[in-house]
Image (cartoon, rainbow, N blue to C red):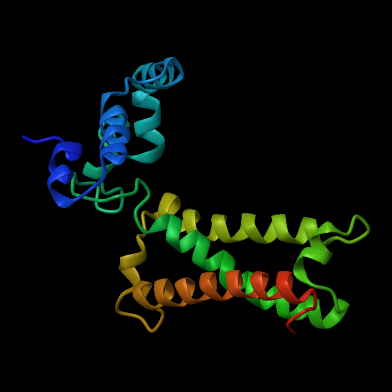
Amino acid sequence: MMSFSASISRRGVSAPTRAVLARAEERTPTPAAEVLDAKVKENKDDIAKVTGVDPTLPSSEVDIDSGENTTVTNILGRTQELVNGRAAQLGIIFAAVSELATDQTIMQQLSDPNSNSQAYFIATAFLATAATFIPRFVGGEQPEDREQSVWTATAELANGRAAMIGFAALLGYEYVTKTPFF
């Protein structure tokens, strides 16, 4: 099998780029990475109990939602996207309410030492994370178990993705204009 750098040499990639890619392919793991790998192998049974996945498998071979070895690019499957989406949905709502009440941008509120915004932010992130993981650990419910109801996992993922993009856009807008959006 041809190496990546050798395969792209035929595609018009410059010699310096090919040299960098060749050096990257030859790298050996750092001592810190080797220590981490040893710790994971040493504690693999404990990690497997908590996560339900053998930590020594490459993440590309594990789907934690189904418990099967499949091709997935992340270790938590849809769970991490659900957590981030739920947090973004709550963040948009709380941003609108708090900006209307205080007439300050999100960053102004979070950086104000005299406000409780930081505590509210941490509590909201914790609650969104707990709301995602509790059904999974208590009753073994997966997001796909609700596909027959009005509130489907697919709709929640789509809404969460839109909220993540919207929240990032809100932060960008407020950073550029230095004024609250709402």
